[in-house]
Length: 277
Image (tube, rainbow, N blue to C red; front, top):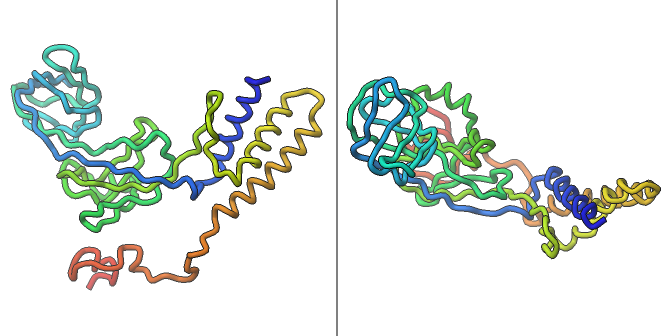
């Protein structure tokens, strides 16, 4: 019964996680981008995806690679620093053989494990707010993505596979990127774990768990239905409470607020705000 109760509680948390991007669960993380860096004495072989070097420390899977004999937008598929020399596999076979210096640029950065949805992304030092972009659209807009520059967009394309956010263009320097995001409720998995939920909502989530628990017990259908009704009301109340923002100014806002309140004259932001001449 304790095991079933634990399963019911976990299921209740998962259901509430999927019902809403809860405002009370907003959090912030900071990502420090990596400037492109060189690795000397890399050995390439024409027609092979394998590259070796005395040391590939600091290189990560997903890094873009450029240099003599490297095809455009090749990236590191995997890396093994156990053997000597270190070995990595590229997405595209080299076009020439030789011992060369390669440049590595990092476009993908890990987000917290409790990450759910982006709230917004900024580079405060440059008064810049990054905008979301889908990979398909960005590929159409910028077919050659081998260049590096200050990031202007973020892309969640690699999130499902690697738990990372991607910046476009690939960062050309070190930037402190502040990511505000909605996190998940922490699903309790062991005894004694404090419930990760505002105290005002505990009763409703426990009612959800009770309903699920009693559903598995023969002869408790009436009680299960009752607790399911209680949980549904509590969930709706929690959604309304979470959506309240007494300090919010309701009404139409000028379009320029989408790009920022102030900017230097003649900048691209200024063009977006007022329209191109």
